[in-house]
Amino acid sequence: MTEYLLYYWPGIPGRGEYVRLVLAEGGADWIDVEREGAPDGEPALSDILSDTSRHHLPFAPPFLKHGEVVLAQTALICDYLGGRLSLAPEGKKDRRFALQLALTIADLVAEAHDIHHPVAAALYYEDQKQAAARAAETFRDTRIPKFLGYFEQVLKANPDSQDWLVGETRSHADLALAHTVDGLTYALPNAMEAALEDHRRVRDLSRRVRALPAIAEYLDSDRRQAFSEHGIFRHYPELDA
Amino acid sequence: MTEYLLYYWPGIPGRGEYVRLVLAEGGADWIDVEREGAPDGEPALSDILSDTSRHHLPFAPPFLKHGEVVLAQTALICDYLGGRLSLAPEGKKDRRFALQLALTIADLVAEAHDIHHPVAAALYYEDQKQAAARAAETFRDTRIPKFLGYFEQVLKANPDSQDWLVGETRSHADLALAHTVDGLTYALPNAMEAALEDHRRVRDLSRRVRALPAIAEYLDSDRRQAFSEHGIFRHYPELDA
Image 1 (cartoon, rainbow over the protein chains, first blue to last red):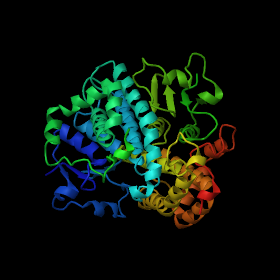
Image 2 (spheres, rainbow over the protein chains, first blue to last red):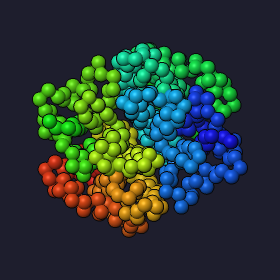
Image 3 (tube, each protein chain N blue to C red):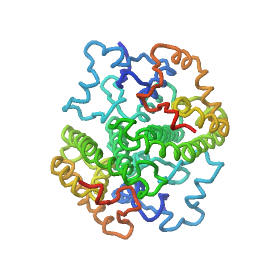
Image 4 (tube, chains in turn green, yellow):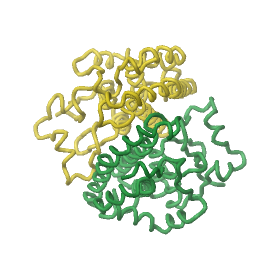
C-alpha cells in the first residue's frame, strides 16, 4: 500500500513541488493523486476539501494524506515528512530553524507569485500588466538581493557544514531553496544571473541539490512537471531586467 | 529576570500583536524590547539582525528571544510559546493542526496587507491606489467569505468543543483568528459587518477571545497599540464596501 498521498492541482510544479522533492529525496513510496489516480478506497482532492465532517480540514492544496493524518501548509508538510524521511535536522532547535527557513522561503515564493498577479490571483495577468511591471522592478532590485543575502548569511554561519543551510547534511529547507532558485531563474533569468553571481553560496547550494542522485533521477523523470506561464514562477520577458 | 523578549517595530500592532496576545493570555513575563527597552546585557533588534556570527538568524521581525533561543516567523513563535504557556493543544496531531491554522491565518493576513499595497510594500499607498481598489474588491467579495467560511467549518467540526478551533479550550490559533477579525473589522467595517453576520461562529469566537480576562486586561492596557494607517490593517474608506 502506498504510504504517502500528495494532493495538488495537476499541470504545474506549484507549491506541490516542494513536497514532491522531499518525497523523492527521502525515497518515499508516494502517489501524486490528481495526476496518477487515487488508490482504491482513497478520496480525491475535492472529496477531502468538501468533507464537512472532517475537523483537520485543509484550506487549500497542497496537502498530504498519510494514513489518517491530513496535513496542509507546504512548509509544515515538508517538516513533517522531513522528520520521517531523515530530511530534517535531528536536534529540536535546528529542526525548528529548518521550519523557520522553509516558512521564510514560502514568503519569498508568495512575493515571486505576486509580481505577475499583484492585484488579484483571480484576475488575468493581462489585466494587471502595468501593476506587475512596477511590482517586478521592486522585487528584482530590492527583494531578491535581500532574500538571497539572508540565505547566503545563514549558509556562511552554519557551524556544522558550509554546504547546507542547517545541520551537517541536506534538509527539506535546502531542497526548498534550490527549487526556488530554479523557479526564479526560469522566471527572471537576467536578474537571477546577476543575483547568483553575487550570492555564490546560494548558487552552489542549488547545484549541489540538483546533483543529489535521487533528486537528479526525479528531475529527469515524467513525474517532474515543467515550469510554465500557469504556475508560480512565470517567464514574462517584460518583467525581467 | 524577564523570560521572554519580543522584537518588533514599535508604533503598530502589526504581526507582533499575534505574539503579544499569546504572551498576555499565557501570563508570561515579557518585554516588548523596542518599546520598553532591552534589559541589561540583552541586544536590541538591530543588533540581532546584523549579527553575522548568528546562525539561527531571523529574516525579519517579529522574533522572540527566550534565553539562547531566537525564533522568527509569527505562527512558529506562537506555536513555541503555546507549548510553553498552555496555549497549544496537547496531542501531537491537534498541535500540528493549530499551527496549520495559524499559518492559514498568516496567509489571510498577508492578503489583507496586500489590498492596500498590491504593487510593493516599499511604495506609498497613494502611488498604488488604483490597483488597491481592484485588489480590495476581489478580497472583499471572494477571499473574506472563503477564509471565514473555512474557519466556520473548522469550528463546526471540532469534536472536542463548539467554542474553539481545536481541542477543548482556547489556543494560540483562536487568539490569532480573533485578532485578525478585529483588524479586518477596523480596515473594512462595512464588508466585515456583512461577513460576520454570515459567519456567526467566527464572530462569536472573536467575542469570546476578547472576553478572556487576561486578554481584556491587555486590550485595556498601554501595551496595546491602536490600529492605524501605518499597519497591516488600514482603514481607507474607499477600499471598503
